[in-house]
Image 1 (cartoon, rainbow, N blue to C red):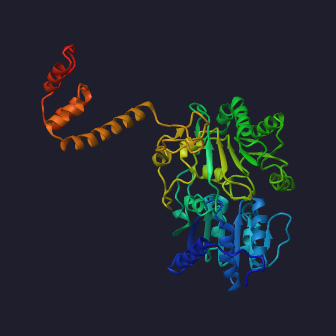
Image 2: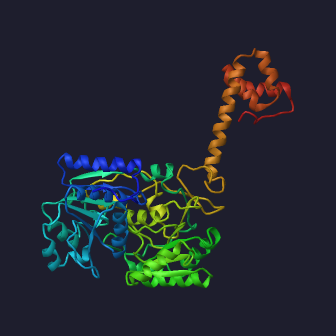
Image 3: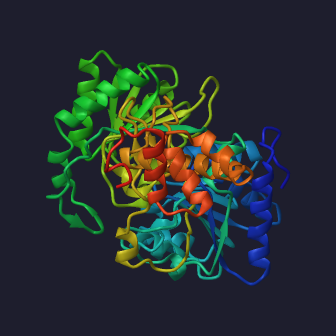
Amino acid sequence: MPAGAGAPVLRDYQTDVVARVRAAYQAGSRRVLLVSPTGSGKTVTFSHILASAAGRGKRVLIVVHRVELLDQIGTALDLAGVPYGVIAPGHPETDEPVQIASVATLARKCRLERWRDKFDLVVVDECQHAIAGSWAAVLASQPTAHVLGVTATPERLDGRGLREIFDAMVEGPTTAALIAAGWLSNFTIYAPAVAPDLSRARIRAGDYATEDLRAAMDGIVIGAAVEEYLRLCPGAPAVAFCVDIAHSEAVAVRFREAGVRAAHLDGETSAADRRAAIAGLGKGDPQVIANCGLISEGLDVPSIVAAILIRPTKSLGLYLQMVGRALRPAPGKDRALILDFAGNVARHGFPDDPRAWSLDAKPRRQRDQAATAPLRRCAECGAMNRPNARACVECGADLRTPKERAEIAIRLRRAEEFEVEGRLRGMSYWARIRWAGADEERLRLVARVSGYKLGWVWHQLREQSPAIVGGVCG
């Protein structure tokens, strides 16, 4: 089927990904996992793949887990010129060869029977969820279909590998490569000097228990987040990621008390109100959206400048999804800001750190292992720097510890001495004596170059300055 007049032209890396996905199917794989960073245009990429399949007379099912994603994918299909139906509440069923389905709706028994074994290709968005009950039931209802899973983060909190579902993985470009090419924004990370105390937070299903996080991330932490927003990017479009609904509401209230236009969104907010708030974010009303588990996955929200992390997580995937919301470039945006009050950056590393994804299960000890060496926080401006940084990327302040500065001074001094020793070797004995004079350090260098014992220095000093007494050569 020809692409619609408004269909976006694929970027070079998207064209490459499409070719490698097709090659995986041609090599015999039936269930392929496509991994590509948040903001890389996964929806555009898989829309191109399914448009091609539909053009060859194939029936395609796209499965999503949130109502906003129905609209987002529908827009991409409209641009590609692909007619489609929607299997979700409030939408009449059609017999279009391409269908977008809410997993919650499709997994109901009557719907599964209605659509059983009807599709040639199933596209699973945010497919790290695909092992869960409803998703597994949907995939089981299409036993002969090829499957294309799409995600930015193929890692689950429970450590289960996606090899249970997929038999091949195709990786797109890295976040670092996309930033270098200008397809994603560069970023600066800020964090307080002291991370939140989570020592009493229990672990449940691989992540911190929500009710324990609520107490740790309330009060002074919310106030600090508001203050940093006002210091670093007042009025800029921002999304705050919160612990639960009550926490998110409290964050929105605190921002409003500080004169910032802020809204709260959660899964109970009506679809119309969600769309209105998200659409208004880029226009300055609201300026900040506080949310709980709503804008972390899949949703393209334009113009976000700052991601405010007030929700600690042990999930690398959730962390990358949250910070990825701010990395999309936008007109007038020179960088993204990540304001981390949850210790997530220290826990998981920078968004563009290299990461090795796998279809295999990941044992708990690997999941709990620190993702990075200790980061360096600038005491002058609060910016976080990589472990090997010597100067702050934001303000240029010296980040070296006293020990490091002493070691550098020793190395510089030794290098200078090595250079001087080279010159001394080319001098005669008396030229060396005249150069050293009564300077003890210079005499020590002459002794080392000449192979003299250390007592020679003492004798030279005594001859040139008889007032000097013992202890000089100690």
